[in-house]
Length: 238
Image (cartoon, rainbow, N blue to C red):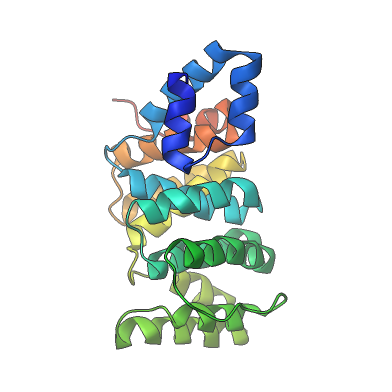
């Protein structure tokens, strides 16, 4: 078995079809891609777990379930809690709205399966407040449970700004990581103006330039070189 195939079997437990086909048509191409992925997804200013779970949130926001589910496994394998996963999926609402929350349920249900956590399956079409309350079942501690209930109430209300701000507050996930996620969402959707805006907002809450650069490497993997073009424009030259 080639190094590339071995790498992806280790990551996913099985060799995904798209990996096998890349190998079958051009083994050298798979080797180069494997090396790029290995470098982009290594520990650095962002951990491997953080990169995987950021990719879950980014792909939920842009409604790309396939990649979202792949990286859900990486997140759980890397030690992400169900509560953390729920918060990243909820932040995606700030870009993708209710559709992003509905897509995100596929990630969460897969995480329940991976962690062997018993839970009632949430009905398709559940509204955002219902999704927030569903996630709240997996919160640890009264303060965290209250956070999800507050979100649910805001989803039911009319104060859009209060909802958006609440989604970015620190709970089990820091506001810094949530700002990194929002920057990544606009990077992968190739929105240069908003990428710049959110990168600056991220800096203002304490995100470091090295973290933004590593976010860019992860974005490159899911949205290609154009995503690197977008975030590189906002990075401060060393």
